[in-house]
Image (cartoon, rainbow, N blue to C red; front, side):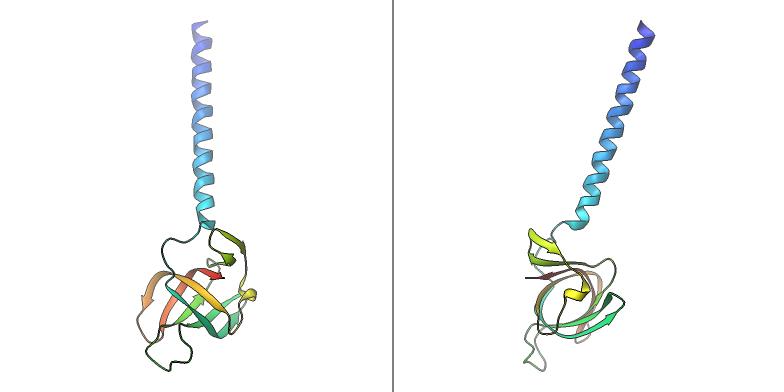
Length: 129
């Protein structure tokens, strides 16, 4: 009887650990689609778009009419970049094909930013409001 109780306790503990691990994995996986934290790195108009196999580079300009002085960024869009249509928290997934010249976007950078003019960075998230 005592050995049976011990087996039940061990099995229950193993099941609980397995369920906990599963929940942790699901939480970590869902963070990939979470809204970005903080304000966008740049908000502006796409003035140039260079597609490269469902990825590419976009030039985002805060004020396209300014030749110099306003924020501009040459943004690499890669396979890890998440693109959304709508507003943060209530958006649908998009793709590089949804991006258009003249479109207003918000971009969150990921990794190092080269401080040339325009800035050069890789996008973690692009939101098409």
